[in-house]
Length: 126
Image 1: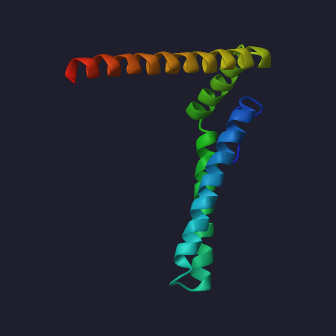
Image 2 (image 1 turned 180 degrees about the horizontal axis):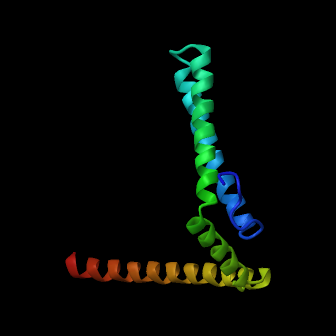
C-alpha cells in the first residue's frame, strides 16, 4: 500500500514538479549537512547521516504526494490550470509597452509637480 500511486496518471505534472522541487531542496540541505559534518566527524558519519536524512525526506515526500487529500488537491489544481485562458505573446508585449509608457508619463508629471511646488515654496519662504 505504501508504494501504490493514488490515482495514477492524474495530476501527473503537478505531483512530479512538486516532488522534484521538494527533493531538490532536501538534496541541497543534505549537501550542506555533509559539509557541516565534514569538518569535525569521520567519513562514515559525514556520508551516512545525510544519506539517511535524504532517504527519509524523499520517502516522506513520496508518501505525502500520494496521500488522498494532497493528491486530490494537486489533481484539481492541475485541472484548473488547464482551464486558464493564457494571454498571447502579442497581448503581453502590448500590455508591457503600455505599462512602461504610463510609468514614464507619471514620473514626468510627478517631477514637474515637484518642481512647481519647490518654486512656489521657495517664493513663499524666502
